[in-house]
Image 1 (cartoon, rainbow, N blue to C red):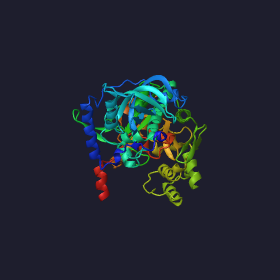
Image 2 (image 1 turned 90 degrees about the vertical axis):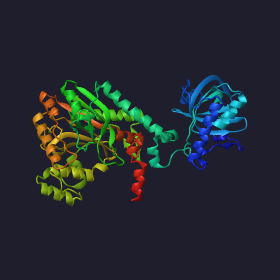
Image 3 (image 1 turned 135 degrees about the vertical axis):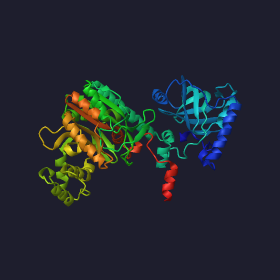
Image 4 (image 1 turned 120 degrees about the vertical axis):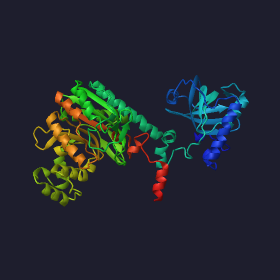
Length: 524
């Protein structure tokens, strides 16, 4: 819209003032001036007839220099304002896009019924970028081609006390973007698009599972015994019950209880909490979906995962092929499938399936450049270390890694033909685990033994190991049908489908240290 700005025009730029305090004080005075003029600086409502994007589409063919006899009412935030003697142009942004307000002294009137001249003068003097304005009028395309609302009536809906960032294209301070996400959303269209796509992704997952007959259920966030994953939980306390509780680290064990109770296809999409480190791929609270299906196995769940994610990619991006951080990712089926043993052998030259002695396994791993294997308790743990260090980051295209060691899979059913392994898969995309699934362990005796081994590790000081969930064992003793389960990290899937480099870009309000803590830490 810069093309509409004659050489003599002056552009408002609040952020060039001496400081936020002076800007805020000036705007507070404008609040009082609005009240004195009979205008409400914080309105109660405004009737909207059309979102901005709908108007842009409806009048896309309107010729330059013409008007349409079509009355509209819009509302949004002023993103830019250019004021002349008897004419002003505002850029108004709602959640769907932007449109120009064409404000002419001879036709404009404030909603409070002021005389034209007074209304226009107040508009020039008492509005700022960041204000939320309501406007009614007709559609006009300017001589220079800008679709506009030719305003007849306007009203201040919310007076903004703080200025938007200097640059119209948004915040550049990454920490401030996360900390003040509301400002980031205002000024960065790409960020708004990320969270629209996130909503589409979760809606598409729910729709896909609903069509397959899955039932969405809810399970407790507060639990007396955490389980379903190896992770350090957050601890809290219930005063009335006088008991220690934990924020859930997974939804798995309660969803399996639902299967025991007779629901053959269930899922839950919600937050889980793990008291672990923060990185570009980890946030202490994150969103997962876990689903469980009776009478199925891990092969069936891999097929479901492949179909669902391919379909979601098309719905959200319009293609089975997307760009992620310079890589081309192809979601078209079939996806690669490889056993953990074969994947490690390909990258290291070591076939751990042929090694039966733990010391020899560690020696072979060390020779292959794998570090920190001394603490590994089994060959399965050594294999997993080799995979994480040498293979995981290389799996760029969607890849199912299957058949994991039993030692690292305490809730998985033993493989039907491969002793020492379980029927488990993990899905890797762009070098990150995105999904984890397996044929579920339904033998309560075997399950108790594995959980007791976890309890022994907890007693030895392992903060990610857990005690035996006796009620879950009891549920299994009533009988759970053959079942397959799978969980997807929603945040990581959003990262891939929105080209987000960090998980913080996929979470609206990621956990951050208080600013004082960051300052104190920097001074150390």
